[in-house]
Length: 150
Image (tube, rainbow, N blue to C red; front, top):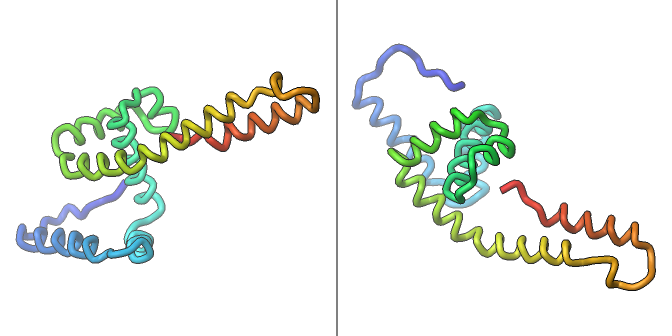
């Protein structure tokens, strides 16, 4: 978990450094710059922690239940609850960004559902004689390729 010094700084200094962080984030115009900035700014643990929080919030907005979020992301129900409370009380800007992500991903979700349906409906019983084992294995591979964590 990230640690902050117990020594207090003046409010003006705190506001200045927070504005500096926001300014740096705004200047990340492309993916390469953003990746470079995040890689040099955060440790692996911090990146994982933040990514999990974002994923929890996204899954909550998608309407997933706590059990599925817990099983998928390997986080505690208390963490899920804290993210939900945070999302409901303070996360309005974050919620709007995630809603844009959801809109963008809806086309991908439809395509993923089509691939999954095609893989499941590819029934070897109706395709005539041949190697059923290989066809079933191929069908199973298509289903696995079509699946995504959330």
